[in-house]
Image 1 (cartoon, rainbow, N blue to C red):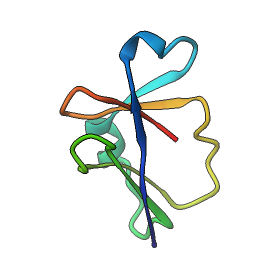
Image 2: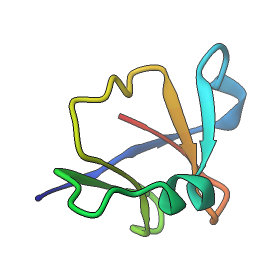
Image 3: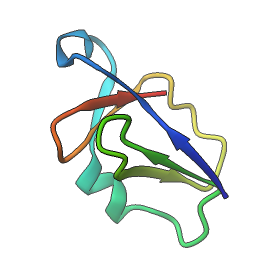
Length: 70
């Protein structure tokens, strides 16, 4: 499994990206994820994926309030 730290950015620049709340993304984690993504600010897990998802247009909002993107 790969651990990836996501980069944070100001919420003003979310634009057309889809915002996913970390709480919801954590509930949907597959049993055996290939990669886990962590918040760039607080290092908490925010997303996991078992496939080659296209995350370029997805923003994950962490519980700490930071917006994260690949």
